[in-house]
Length: 145
Image: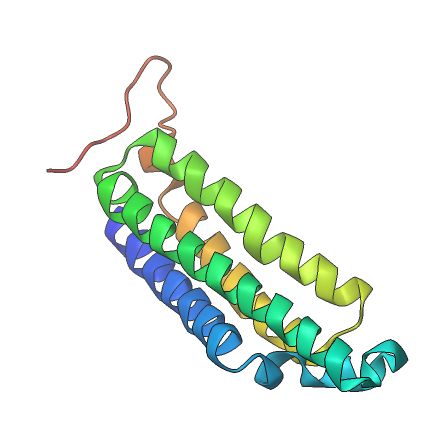
């Protein structure tokens, strides 16, 4: 199950990487509907500043994706408990927070994409949970070479 969970998480992380690259390179692709819906952003200068902010968010997301890949391959793949907790926290702070944020501001385009990432993340961390948290008290997690 650990190998399957790792593969599913890899797909989810790469999906997040693709989303962050699109946001970095072309923020209009994911933010255009919101800019059109907010009257204050009809000014080209304000819209440009908003797109610049979106680019920065894309760059930060790409950095998080790179960090998640390191965690996945250095610790999670080997069954280390700290990596499970790190991937759990990263998923909460990125996928779940993002979904809640886009629901609050009602950004339909992003509301559709984030559940895919949440589903991949949840399956990826829950599938191998017995590897990280065995039922026997005092047992250590299985570490694969």
